[in-house]
Each structure stands twice: as structure tokens, then as C-alpha cells.
Amino acid sequence: MRVLAELPHPDCKISIFGMNQKFIIKFEQGTLEQSYKIAEVDVVGGINGVFEMLDEAFINQVLELFNQMRKAIIDTYNKYQ
Image (cartoon, rainbow, N blue to C red; front, side, top):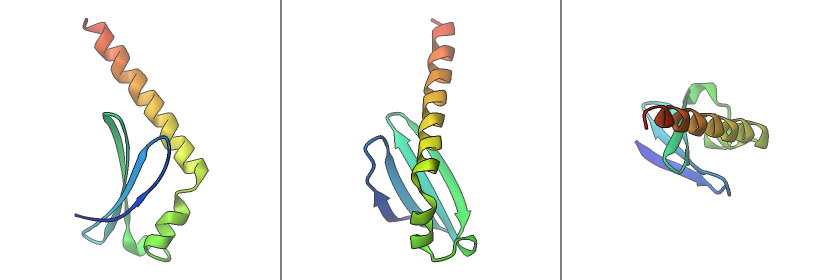
């Protein structure tokens, strides 16, 4: 797996990797991470096409999922304290 790009964002780290004819888009926020795999043939324009896909609406959905993930693990952790 090789790093193709990193996109600056104030709320999370965004990295794009290439592996086995797939783009892997990884979002990290603290101890949480989300990964999305997309076949290279499904993206028009290569890496630039991936950049276009990562618009603010999508990133906002990713950030909301981070909030849900964080709440889920905190709630689960607190049940067993």
C-alpha cells in the first residue's frame, strides 16, 4: 500500500492510498478511523477524481459518523464500568 496523497482538514486526517487497483480513502480522528475502498476503474480522472469526490457534504457525513462511533464506544465502555 502506498500513500498517494494527504488532504489537509481541520477536523480529521485524510489519506489516500493505492493498492491492488483500488483507491483507499482513510479518515482518522483520534483513535477512530474510517476507510473507503473504490476501484480505480470506477473513478474518472484518477487521483484527481478522488479529490472531487471528497466534497464538504461527504466529509460532513464522515464527521457525523465519527460522532456516532465515539458515542457508541463511550456508551459501551460505560456499561461495563
